[in-house]
Image (tube, rainbow, N blue to C red; front, side):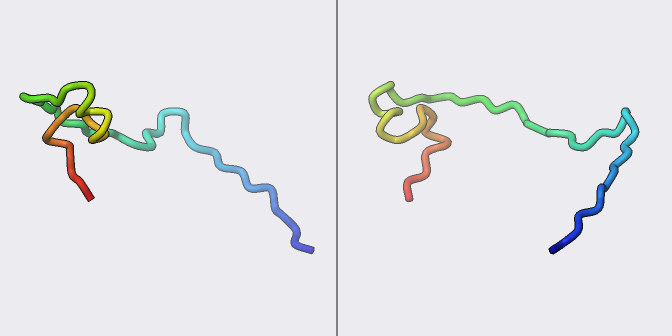
Length: 50
């Protein structure tokens, strides 16, 4: 049987694990709610059929 060792990770409280960068996006057009349901998005810029 394998023996597990107790691992301890002592990170400083001020450590920054990640930084997200999300640019502002402006969408000019949009689909109707019915089209959005069938296409999966209301924004034509995001619609990419398979």
